[in-house]
Amino acid sequence: LMQLFRPLDMLGWVYRSIRQGLIDMEAMFALTDTPAEVVDAPGARALSVSTGHVRFEGVAFGYEPERIILKGVTLDVPPGSSLAVVGPSGAGKSTLARLLYRFYDPTAGRITIDGQDIAAVSQASLRAAIGIVPQDTVLFNDTIGYNIAYGREGATQAEVEAAARGAAIDSFVAALPHGYESMVGERGLKLSGGEKQRVAIARTLLKNPPILILDEATSALDSRTEEAIQATLNAASRGRTTIIIAHRLSTIVGADQIVVLDAGKVAERGTHGELLAKGGLYADLWARQAAERELEEAAEG
Ligand code: ATP
Image (cartoon, rainbow, N blue to C red; front, top):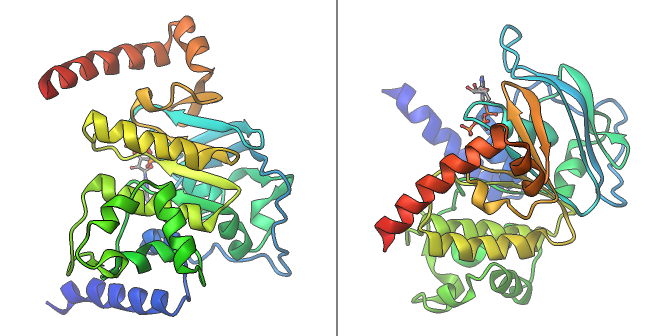
């Protein structure tokens, strides 16, 4: 039985540490996944972000040596542009994001930001430069204000409210019984998937990172909520180098660059129009999802 409680103890510890500002939010999501071997290189310097140019150069990786997930992936994401990664389930899309955040190191190749190998800079400086809007946002058993303010230590109430406006969650908060002081999480008010995602967007707006990773939720929201969230995400990504891990192609039609990942390799790349014209994997995926969308929309009325 004690075995069962150990993860809960761990969570309690994580929560207390976070309240003390010892570890950052995103690190918590993957805490159990973070291998101890990812450590700062001796004398690692801080990453110096000038424009936010992200490059993957021949990146290979496997969680286990006998099972290679990425087989030489090269990506170039110019400053301020957006790259969407699509592909079948298990293709390695989220793995790309985990490598950029340096939860793991590539087994071959390298990832650079403004020409600096991310394996050579301090992890704290790397993670300060990257904001993540995860698939599933974990809320603390604390006030909604605290949950948003988490994006940046020392944020003022005015800054928290501005971020909430940017994420279009301000009117929702205003309608809560105690406004920003309302308790949320397991022991408070439960938020819907879309509301939680807006909290994550607000946190990210507060953090104001030059590089953004959007890990799109697999579970579909209804199409009206999805459109609203999409608009706030688009606003949040303006002027930032953005990598979108996409499950629904409808959300990435406007991306500057789309990469189709298949079995750990880049199978196709181009804009939405170019990839449709090509009539390959992307065009197939698009046709399939368009048919599903029509069915859903008919069901929604
Ligand atoms: P999806 O669209 O389903 O989210 P994805 O393309 O994002 O999939 P990844 O999450 O990158 O896929 O996973 C790629 C492969 O790596 C999968 O086969 C998965 O089982 C495996 N994998 C992911 N995380 C781990 C891990 N921590 N340890 C071992 N294998 C893992």
